[in-house]
Amino acid sequence: MLSSKNKEKIYIKCIESIRSNAESNKLKFISKLLFESFDSWIFCGFYFQDNENLLISEYSADKIPCSPIGLDGVCGAAILKNEILNIKDVNTFQGHIVCDEDSKSELCIPFDFNGMKYVLDVDSNIYNAFCEIDVNYLAKIIKEI
Image (cartoon, rainbow, N blue to C red; front, top):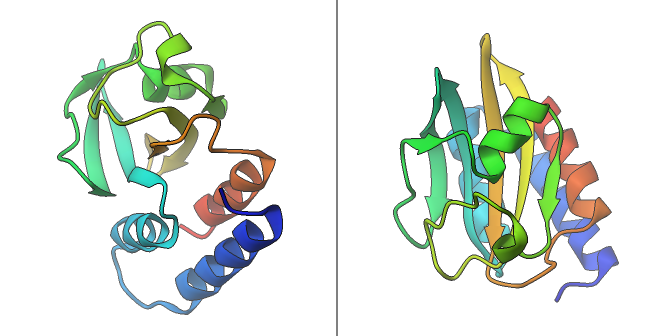
């Protein structure tokens, strides 16, 4: 597990890369950059709401993600509640949608983009992988979109 200091250094480098990158598809760039920056992440991507479903937008992952998914999982709950959800053990979340059986913890950050509701979804193969550092820096990264 990364130390807090090392985790912050990685996020700071990521934010600098995002700010200096001219790629027009920021969601694609961000998901790839973050996924490649953290060894325990097995999924990093963006879903957007389409009526009663969430559809995958851009992502980087070890496995092909589920799409469409209902609003009853962690991503859907984050969008419906409009709040960040940090699930330390996905097995304890009623309605969790299993797209990758290696997923142990999940962090979802909802936001609006181009008039639509989106969620940044990050999964890890480690229980309790995400902390306030992740929440704070990922919220900053969302503002760069």
